[in-house]
Length: 283
View 1 (cartoon, one colour):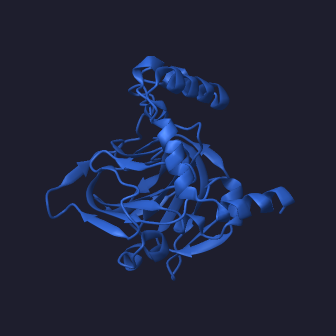
View 2: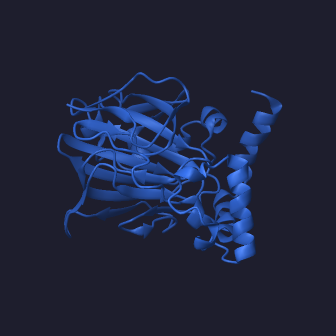
View 3: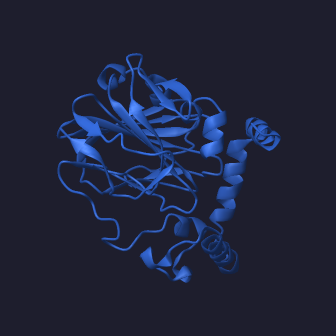
């Protein structure tokens, strides 16, 4: 590890990640036209945003930077693979994939962490033992809405408080189990072939995690919180329906049980993926 990398890692441990993220969030929601349009134009230039994909290219129609950052894409620009296939839930890059071992551990970037650490509960250990996972990292340049990888009925949402380390390639390599240490929201579904879960992991400068059915989730407090949806009605999602969105770059982890689904293991390190690309199949 270089001296610069060591300094960066130490700085992330010392910096008040939540305070920085909230301050960034305040700037990102500034509605002064000159300020927000300047931020958007600079962002488009810096990250080479493909405006041909954007549903509304008129910057004046976005009330603030965050509205543009979580912009919608043109209809049909990310086609879904259809029944029997598992769709990638977001644009990004595959950071890790594999099997959840007998001790319900996941391995990512050379570090292992337990499923109950990731989920904030051991309730699902038996469900997902021997199953699979795939981790997709969203860089700032990526489309930042998260979509359902297959049809399913939404059952439970859990918020787990934590740090806000960066989740880029260098940080996830150097900081052990960063995905199980950062603030996150876990969404549990029941699909036609069995349960599956999506973990939305917060990161440095991620001012909020939001869902279409519960609004802004973070930060509701310092304790693990659960919301149960099967008691008060059913929320059903089709493949490709939006289920969440991030402010700034972050990570989505798809977790599936053994035998119900088969995720592909034909990935290379940091391979780019697009929303709707086939991740595997339902068995």
